[in-house]
Image (tube, rainbow, N blue to C red):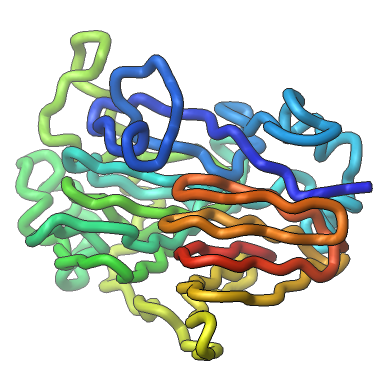
Length: 321
């Protein structure tokens, strides 16, 4: 019988990270800094390890290979690869200005899907900003010249952010997470990134980090982003919880919960649920199991597990297809 899986996250020590994910989100590691924690991952660059039950100690990718549609649902089973990657990202410094390709270009050049993603701002320092597209539409010639002249930031749209903000980043959108921002990122299962500008930083090898100018010039959308940012709608506000849809598209649906009591949920045969706890302590109860979840915990609810309940006081996001 399938059951909720508690996941151990692959951790990435990119140079712009810090110790916050270790200290506040209980990510145990010998790494000195943690930039990213991959909360739901089945990718060649990292996959979760199952921490509980019959499959304890096994890779999530192995579990998917064995259980197939029973675990991931009919929607994901219709795709040739597990479709999502979910991360916590701690930007102690500015990330590179970058862009991700769409599916067609990425499959042709990189052999994996493109990357459309959404960001939920878990926390942000005062005056924190991120880059979201251009201020105004520019030509490809100007884009290339500003990269060469190191004046690209002058034409980038810099958005002030605060806790609770939401950004939808279509593939082809120039973007960068700014320093002092903690983000939950839900994205297509791809690790393809084309850096355009990196503040002249030196990598761990003592050399400037690679840029990918030619590819970025090909895939970047030079129009001003038009996709609506912010939560789509509040679905429900009850005495026990507030629930709002952060993103809903062909690739994923993401729902945010502020819980102070109980809520009932259902994972049917069409899709799994992913639960990522952002704050507090909650208890998950289903027919086969009960577990206490704390800030930083990530749970995979197999498809067709049907009804389950979450109670307690806390904040979490639910992702499904």
